[in-house]
Length: 99
Image 1 (cartoon, rainbow, N blue to C red):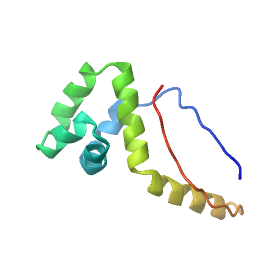
Image 2 (image 1 turned 180 degrees about the vertical axis):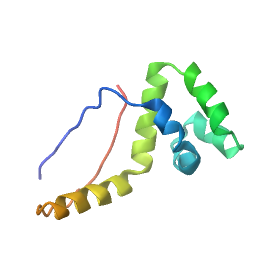
Image 3 (image 1 turned 45 degrees about the vertical axis):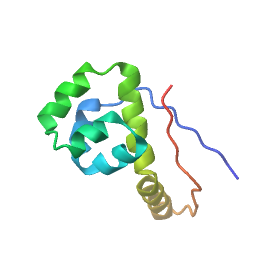
């Protein structure tokens, strides 16, 4: 087995706002408070205001929760991209943590 780690140094959190409505369920399951707000019908405009008040650590946790909530999609897309480039591989897991 090979372990590959990626460290993300910068995230466009404004772009994440466009994805929040589709990811509310994953955020709720992770216990992220933004997920609870989304389940109560929070608009993207309101999400933008909430995001602007979060600390960098809280924003990083939000991004990690979104990645973890969509890990299977990331695995599928990465395996497809590798296959398209002539590399057959099977990814066991994708997990993000905020530091």
